[in-house]
Image 1 (cartoon, rainbow, N blue to C red):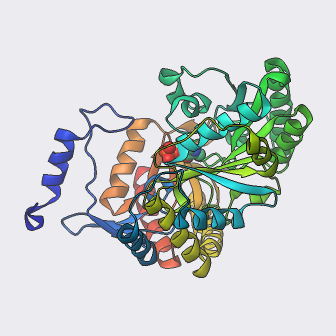
Image 2 (image 1 turned 90 degrees about the vertical axis):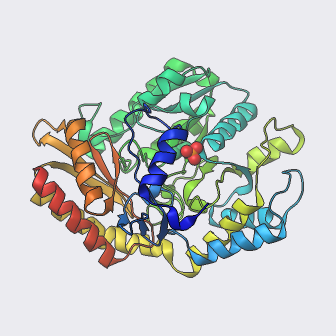
Image 3 (image 1 turned 120 degrees about the horizontal axis):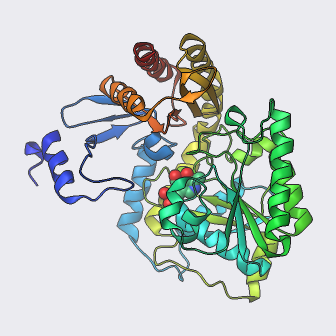
Length: 436
Ligand code: PLP
């Protein structure tokens, strides 16, 4: 490759000719070209810079090209670039030890996967094997990944054309702004959502349900912070019926909410924790399941029927070790808490009071969503064509947003500083002002 001859057009054409994209009809795509990045910024081959308030797919919690993580991957590549999962490997052991140090009391081991979907897949398999039960309950407003059981567990309609795995049932989770329970406040939403879940459990047959699988804070579904008492209530129901509780922390974990795990905000602990994304910011694909002691005991003498060639891949593990160490040494989770719940949250509230197009802003840490509406009273979602125009305008002005349905998800890296927040908010202000 002659790198001097490469420009945006060349890379875009190469992509359009040869690359088959996710979740898309292929003909209409016009992907943004990204050549490099550093911290909260990325740029193209013409030198145009973008402030990355998407963290790509909400995964670059440590920002782009963190030097310590890059150096660790390079060093590991020089020592041992791959190894079979059956062998003992230093980087894998150190990564598991660091992840467990962040987990609540009572978690003992980590099963590594390649990403979030296969982590959910294996958590579901563990729950079924442990309980001897079949069904998995999960929320309609959820995304759990694009493999057999993970996509069937997903609530959002992307599951429907992929629905072939058996044993899945769904329930409505709390979402006060668009309440499925005709609730007028958080407490009502919480009580009614729990009552509904209890009815679903009773109707599906408690003795048939292996696990309730929930995102601690549903992300792609709209950054839906559960009302106070909801996760405690789910834990109580699970305990009452002998059902395992799995928290999917793939998007919300490792700093995104200003804590290492999102469930820490609610004082509730699950039986299995599913992670990916922020654990090493996706520098090398990795995910996994953190397994609590009773489930570890079960598999001490029972075979676990699951495995992956690249489970605990050394490059991914070296990236985990370096990411978690750098996040601790540099106070990156605290930064997400301070800047996210400070300048970012305040600025977004200000935008919501200035622009009628924003129906609601909600979030925690560096995990926020602006819900755009064509009418504040009816809360009618802003139509897709207008969302597409807003997305285009934000990108033209140098801000990468994570746009889902009628929402702008504001999810910068956990390292974002006040100046970058101010710059991002100014672009949002200008674009939403012009759209109102
Ligand atoms: N679970 C949650 C909560 C997610 O947000 C995602 C991806 O966005 C997944 C699982 C799937 O992860 P992956 O795309 O790494 O398979």
